[in-house]
Length: 64
Image 1: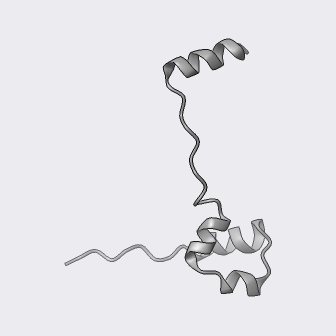
Image 2: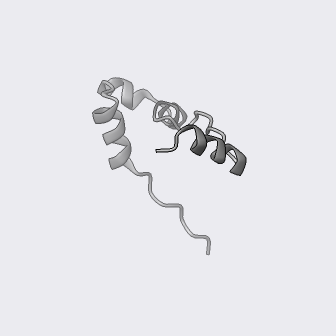
């Protein structure tokens, strides 16, 4: 038997949309899951992670 996916996390999503982003309720409830993900920053590109030489350069530039 296949396992069911976890339930949608309504509590955290409602908190993020209504409290943190302060979306009006009508706007929040009219959003699609993809729009919510974009509003919460889930679609932004991740920054590149520096390799060892990049870290050495950063540590030399900012020794504190």
